[in-house]
Length: 473
Image (cartoon, rainbow, N blue to C red; front, side, top):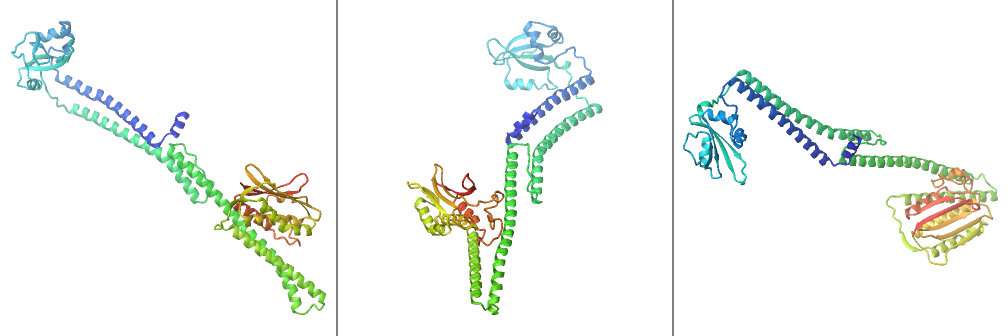
């Protein structure tokens, strides 16, 4: 049974309906056959019983005399001759070829119209006629006619109320059986279609109610299974989009809270020092310069934070389109490292720079990639002490191009690896005096993804932090 149901799942709806219709036709034919052999037999039996006529003959049709005619005699053929009847064998031209019995008329040739008239067996005919075809060794058509005196044949119509009631009952049963078969077929087809449609409708109601984890399991024809698979795919997309929307909303709220925190602290400090200077509470020249320098540093930090925020919003915008082209990347990387080399020396880091001697081509946007490299190196300079080894290496693989920026510094705690690329997450887990905005790695990740690449973090045996930029060739 399971195999049949599985086979039904692989069938098209049209095929199933055709098969069901053929089964309906088969049952209908069987019903007609049963009615054919029950209703007429009952009527014939009752008519013969009510007629109660003894003809002296058990048979009156030509077909029933074929066996006796071929054998040259028999009980029925003898009774026919005793009653004054006889047999005639006609050839293909309807001419009498053989007579069995005492022929009492002078017809030896029949026309086609004449035969039709005689076989009507009107009440004014002298003889009762019955005809049948017989086999002939010469493969020619021959006919056997039986003729019986008309007075021996009584054709009557029985008009009995009891018989009429029985006939009506049998006809009612026949019609009821046909209607019942049609109803069962219609119900079965409607149920086959309604059941999967009800499941789909229930699933849609669940989705409207916000239950996006709803999934359909349909066991029906191929079309319904495809609808179920499409519904489940749609539910997956909606559920994933809803989850991402919720995460984005939470991230946005966290971003605004972090931004407010990072702006409030320096603004409060700037306001306090500026108020002290304006009110003339600081007369010492050295302290005045110290307050002005502090105000300058805090305003610079705020400017950098706002610039990073604008850049993050710009890259994250849906209408932002990077200018990605397949370009040689080795010389580009040399220029970017030359731009930051003075900062590396000033912070006391030891640089190890490696680029292949041959040309290396990759798909990237120079502006976005330059910002990624700048942010990664800036993080290394900001959080690591002097004497830290900084490695920048370009690797040309068969499938991709990698830029590795690694250092042997303090590293990033493993518990922050899952969120290190989120906005306002810092490697020191605190908002310290280092001046970092917490947006550098978030911007670096967005820029890399906009170029069709990926940015990953790992650690090695000697290097605590290894950032890898993966670009398509």
